[in-house]
Image 1 (cartoon, rainbow, N blue to C red):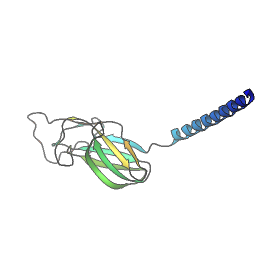
Image 2 (cartoon, helix red, strand yellow):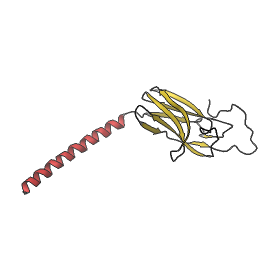
Image 3 (tube, one colour):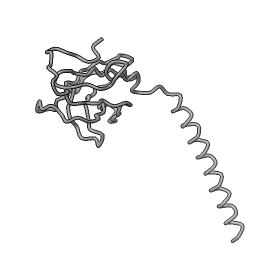
Image 4 (cartoon, rainbow, N blue to C red):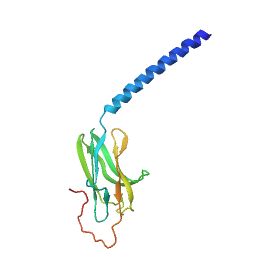
Length: 154
């Protein structure tokens, strides 16, 4: 009986060693794969803050795979605020540029706060939240809007 336990323990140990090596090799391969969502830009290079309804903010990102996608602005908790693109073809290695005016789907300007950009890759069934935040602030008192103003258009 003790001999069988020793043989079983050796087999289990060998399987664990093989599984560990396989997991390590897979992790190394995944580290070398390019990011699916990269080159994210929120607003101009100097600021990620904008003031609706006077301004809108430029949102840029690049995908490294071709996919059907939906692009959303979300609150930090994941609640969808606005859909900037629906079921749009996102070609690989292409920079995609969208603008958000600070309004939700009903056209209501959202309260000041931090928002995030989320890209849903429908063909892969995955959702990617871009790094960085969009900071929406109230228009300072006494400020008048000039129609057509765009933050980060240059």
